[in-house]
Image 1 (cartoon, rainbow, N blue to C red):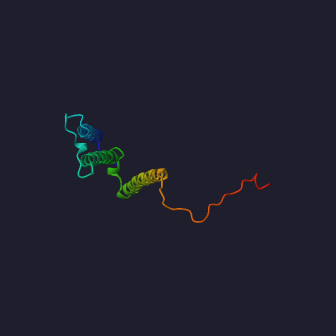
Image 2: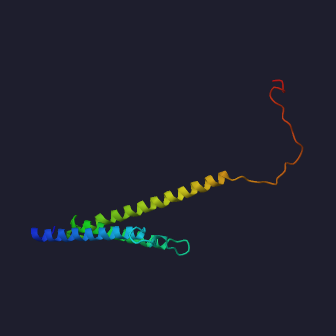
Image 3: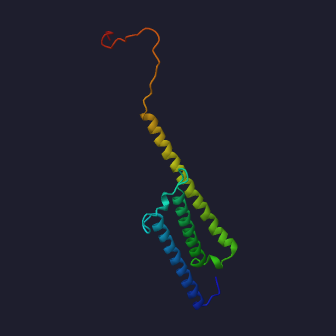
Amino acid sequence: MSAHTYEESKTIARKTIIILGIVTIVEVLIALVGKGYMISGFVPYEWEIGSFPIGLAVMYIAMIALSLYKAILVIFEFMHMKYEVKSLVRSVLLPTTLLIWAIIAFFMEGNYWLNSREYIEQKNMEQVESDMQPIGEKVELESVEDAGH
């Protein structure tokens, strides 16, 4: 635990809340400008390099970075990780990073199976044309009634 007085703790909390508010406002502005709602005719999410949407990627990276900053700020200030022993901080943050890795892996796996399913359904709908001809004589099979059974 920290050895802050009540007034120091209030000042730190107030400063943290103001920083969180400013970062949230910046995130909202990035989203509004990035989607073209703030500036008429300015639509950066449609910018592309080849077929790669560079504007959308920059907007997503900025939003993820700001969100991670806010999460780290909350963890270290309001959950008091800033004032804990380093080994405790590592024992809490390492499983969290593994959880984030697992979530990313599950999304990638799900996307792979979705694309595979669409590919298989597309292949099942295709008609195959063949130039193959049967070899030999045409054989007619007797029906069960004609065989006298």
